[in-house]
Image 1 (cartoon, rainbow, N blue to C red):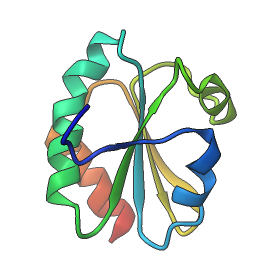
Image 2 (image 1 turned 180 degrees about the vertical axis):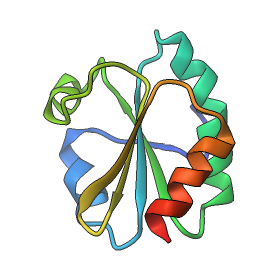
Image 3 (image 1 turned 45 degrees about the vertical axis):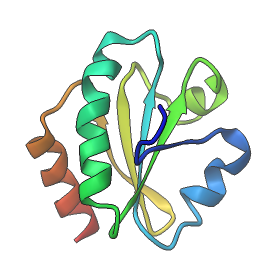
Length: 110
C-alpha cells in the first residue's frame, strides 16, 4: 500500500487517531490474504481521495492487530467503521459499492 490515501495504523495510535480525532474517520479492517478486502480496497482508496478534506481514512491489518479486531467484536473482514465525535457511528461489513459507502458517509458525517 504505497502512495495511497489510506494510512496503515495499529493499536498504539488507534484511539488517538479515531476516538480523539476532531474530524470524522473511516477505518477499514482487513487482511492481505482476504480477496474481498482486495476488491474493496480500491473503492475505499477512491473515497479517501474524494473525502480527503472532510475525513481521514485508515487501514488496520487484522492479522497483525488481532486485539483491535476482537475489541470491536468484528465477525469478519472487510469491515468499515466510521468514527465521529469520539464514537463509532456506523459499521459496514463485506463488499459494498462506492455509492453505498458514500451514502453511509454522507448520512453519518453530515
